Image 1 (tube, rainbow, N blue to C red):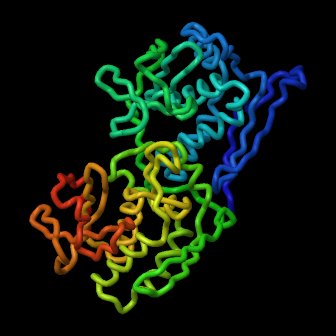
Image 2 (image 1 turned 90 degrees about the vertical axis):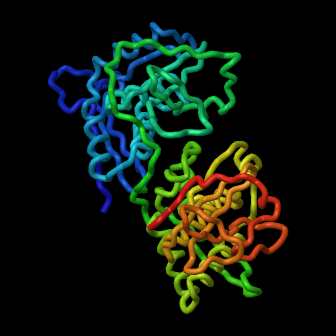
Image 3 (image 1 turned 60 degrees about the horizontal axis):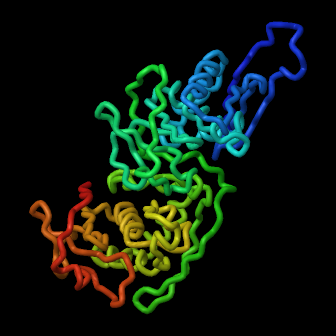
Length: 398
């Protein structure tokens, strides 16, 4: 049964003479597996001229919105966060969805951005605004390593931009420096985290079937996997973060249940070495190779579930996908090897295979999950990498 979250901006009509145009407006929409419902008064909407932006205009917006009653909205946001165990990234997606209902992005982008900023501020986060002419950038304080979006430093703290993609992700900050908007706002200590440890409660009807046809050991396989296109939207603007953060992102229950049991059945009777080899080849040949710049126009690491959704994937995506499979089916120690132009992975087996990688006194066998010109067996590193320096970017030990 879907839960209905009631958000009330104004709950009582205390004056009998209120005009009809000030009557409460009820909005209801689906946020993944939950039905969100809230009530607000349209005249309560704070106005701002998006064509004549200034620090004073934004200060006027902040002064005005503080006089409005959005306590019901904030209470419901916090209730969703508590009841669903929502991580910060999912919480922010809900804030975006709620603000879209109150102040649509396409009607007034600046007002939409300021409403998001205000609700995140009222949620205890530490946001920051910077302005250059008609462009307004919205930052949030985060202590994590974020690699492909702008950040600012303030009093030794890092602030990461949340709306860079809305400006095409191509602002030249040397030519157009942005200046922080000075506002008398309370200073909060809550740091925004990009770690995602729980997905929304998707509906069964959200899923479609994807067919994976591949050949392993001269045998043809045809896998039919349940995938959820809404995962693309959930992670559309997700930045590049540390590998440890990616490895914490789960696969939705329906997708996992459609894939892992089939693989487990296929691997029955095989040794761990044989099973890991099969998973290496499954990852290598189930998806076409595609560089991020060609597919997305920028660097973008895909979660295992995204790899199942998109047509192509690169070496980083396959490392993440292979890790997911090996952990789910064998739960073996693994290390991620990052070279200047390539990423691969190695697994600790009962006995090392081929030329192994020594790490912390243990031997790991390279398992190349990305298709190459030659059919690399387990334990063989790409020849061009033999003399290149690598970094162990992530080590997993059950």
